[in-house]
Image 1 (spheres, helix red, strand yellow):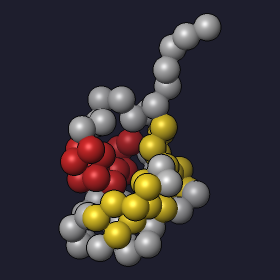
Image 2: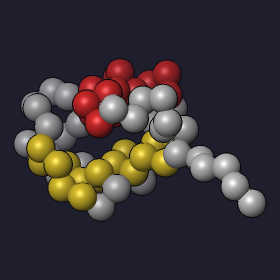
Image 3: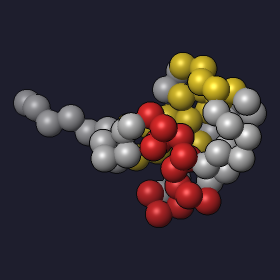
Image 4: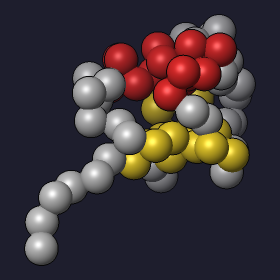
Length: 66
């Protein structure tokens, strides 16, 4: 099935969770905030947030600088 991650269409397996997606992208250590269809998903709920066809996911990381 297809979902949109940070504006980019990606294929994921049926039944995948937010945690599965984040791990498959190799960004688990960097993601500080996530949203599924414009709703914040806390880190401890990633494993319970099951993705569906057409979902929109935003993954944010914080970059130091200044």
